[in-house]
Length: 197
Image 1 (tube, rainbow, N blue to C red):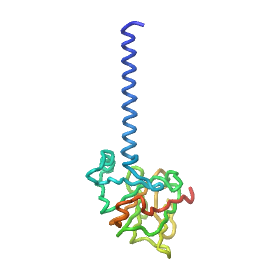
Image 2 (cartoon, rainbow, N blue to C red):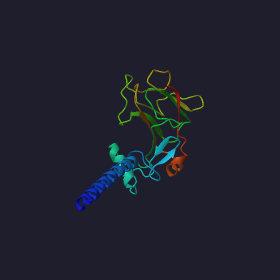
Image 3 (cartoon, one colour):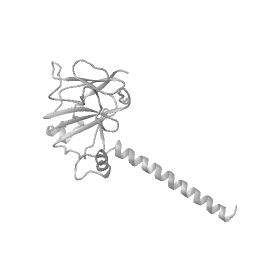
Image 4 (cartoon, one colour):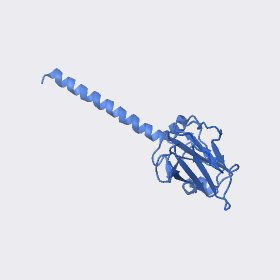
């Protein structure tokens, strides 16, 4: 093999190495920013939260995550935020399905559960309803709650979604008690059970 062919082959191998390396680097950073990894993100069941949200000591991935959302994170003394894109069994949330979100009364001065499209927009629906909070939902006799997430109407706490595509849920707890601020992993997050699809 001539010298020029060897050089061309090495150059081509180097270019392929650079392209593959940049591709892998981009994908891993994108995954770290959008979904997170330990220790930047903690998980409770299917719910995730970012412990350093809005903290001056936040790592670059946490900062980039909230910048990509186009929002300022809240300090833990203000609110705790949990997100999920899956039900309690680990299956992705699908707008075509019906889910039951249930749990005990959540700690804090006020809390809210909202449904969003995968691209972070509120889900358009004829009822113009996008969330339930601690002040407007109907509670069970023991103080717990039950919210039906479904594309079809249901009695009680019905949170409408579309009829196709993935979605995510956002749980916000305002003014949480001190023990939950210091250890958010102990918050009794709601269970999400798929009923039908």
